[in-house]
Structure formats: structure tokens, C-alpha cells
Image (cartoon, rainbow, N blue to C red):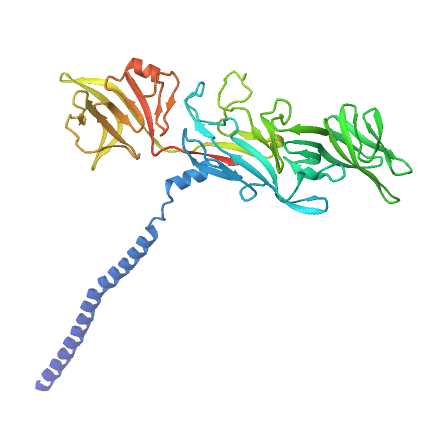
Length: 463
């Protein structure tokens, strides 16, 4: 019995030890499991945080600029209302203009086209503008010229040594140059084989034949026919034609023509570029050009005015659409609207202004301005002593003895007088504050204005 008891005790002891080991392992497992789970959760959490970090925000003005302005040609931006464009010269470095060489008497000379702009203004509030912005161009604000290097002595040009070049996309051949007066041949250059025809305008030009000597060419325009020798200019069927070259061989026979309604002409400074053109010639002993001589400043809603201010999306072009000055319009910006009217509370007169305001950390959708001491209060007539910011704009409201000021718009406390006059068309200040119908507003003693997020700007493109 003793030996069995001892043996049983040993077995129980070993079972206790084994159970203890299992218990220890289980406890350790239970204690460790949450830690591992927490670690995994922490890792997952970190990954999620990294993923949810927002991408860098593109500045608002960049986004708006890229969506509002079509950057075609050369962009001239940051133009503000009523600020004239400073004089600037543009060349092949900005737009598609010529910069190269011309040949004269067997020598090469540098020549360059340029476009000069100045005094162009973006304007609002003129007669019939109706609160819209227009590009205005006064006289001499646009000038185009082809300038030759000083070494080219234009006084040596004659019929034997002519100077050929392209001007506003047309071929010019000058046979005489006397300071500010030149004789030239201009028109479209054409090449015609014997028996071939071309159509210019509504007229058909044909090379009928070249005689056996190869020195005379028979040319028809419609039903009329004339014979030319090389270098001769004649008018056929109201179309002026100059035969520059007659070429005749066994393999090919053709003529080179210059065709136009007036091929050979004499022009001088102040001559119109063409009839009823807004441009006139400017000629010196080393340049030929044109400049704007009409004003594009008025808007005529009846369409009777030939030369009108340029609206958004429209352009002023040089002849032959050679280069155009396009008005892109104004850069769009967010605005805050404010409504002003008179109000009385507890026998005290106020100007009540509805709109979004900020002062310190507080926001307001309505404020009251005491007309006698210019203090500002919230809806509960608790005084606001800090700076009053106009919503999400860069502007603040000023209230002093002279009245209420929203940037460059000012109105008195009686709401019957402002600094934008009494026009019945909406008024846009230079900063960009849009004032709805000042005439009705001053009569009704109620005003509605829109204040831009920042000073508005526009752009033009050279295309």
C-alpha cells in the first residue's frame, strides 16, 4: 500500500507540473496575443494615415488662370482696369514674325519685323458698356514695321536693282525709295504654265501662249487678252498684272506674275493702307510700317460705330489677319455679396449690412453700423471692436466720418450718395467692386455690391 501510494503521488506530481506548464503557456499566449494584434492595428493605422494625407493644394489663382485664359500665341497678363499698357516691342522671340535677311544688289542685309503696343487699356463704365469690360485702343497704340539695317542704302534702289521683301504676308517689290515715299509692286505671286489657269477673286487668269521668241506672253483674264513683255504691268478686266518673268524652254514654259487690283503704286507716310482702313503707312529711309490711326474706345449698341472697343473673346487684327491682339477677358474670381439698407433699433439709426464678415475668430452674416458714431455691432447689438474683414476676400470694411468704404467703393451713411455717380448701368470699380445700378440704389437707399476675392485682372494674347 505504501509503494502504491508513493507511485500515485509521483504521478499526481508530474500531472501538476504538466498542467502548470500548459497554464503558463496559455497565460503567455493570452498576454502576448493582444499586443501582436495591437501592433498589427497600429501598423495598419499608420499606413492609412499615410494614404489619407491630402495632395498639395494648387494655388487658386493658378487653377483659375489655366482654366480661364487660353494661352495661345503670346500672353500678356496682369492687366488691371484703367491702367494703360506700357510701351513694349515684340518680335520673333514672342510671336511669329520675320527676322532674317533680304537681298539687294547681290548683298545680304538684316531685316526684322516688330510689333509695338502701348496705351492699351481695359476699361469699364464708359457709355453703353453696361458694366462689362472692354479692351480699348487709342490712336497710335498699335504699330507694325519692317526695319532694315542701316547699311542698306535705300536711295540706291531703282528699276534695275529692286528690293524684294514680304510685308504683312504680301510680296512687295520696291523700285524707288525716297526717304518717306516709295514706289512698289505688291500683290500675290503666281506661277503659270502655258495653258494653265488660276482664279483670283472671281476672275480666271490664263497663260494662253508664249511666242516663239520667248519674249512675249499672251495672258487672258476672263474674255480679255493682252500681250506682255517681261517686267511690264497692264490692267486686264480691272485686274492689274505684272509679268516678272517669262521663261521658255523645250522642257517648260511659264510666267511669274504679281496679281492685284493695284499692283504698282506709290505710297508715302500718312497714306491709308487701303480704303477705309484703320491703319496708315509710316515710312522712313530704313523702315516701312503701318500704325493705328483710329480709336477703338466706344461701344455702339446699334452697330453704327465702325471702330468699336473690343469685347471679350474679340480681337483687333493687322491687315491680312497677320497678327491679332485678342482680348481674353478678365480672370474669374470668387466674390462676396453685400446688401446695404437703413434700419432703426431702439430709436438709433443704423446702416444694416447683410453678407459674410469675419473679425478675429468670429463670423457674422449681418452687422449694424451706427450712423452717428460709426461703431459696428453684431445682430445682438454687441459692439465689434476688431478689424471687419469681408468674408474670404483680401478686403476690409472701413467706417469713419466720410462713410462706408469697400476697397474703392464709398457710400455715405444716408445711402443716397456714392463715389460711382448715378448711372443706371452697373458700375465696376478699378479694384473690381461691382455696384448694381447706382441710380436706383441712391433713390431707393438700398445698395447691392459684389466684392472680388482680390483685385481683378485681365489679359490679352498676340496670335
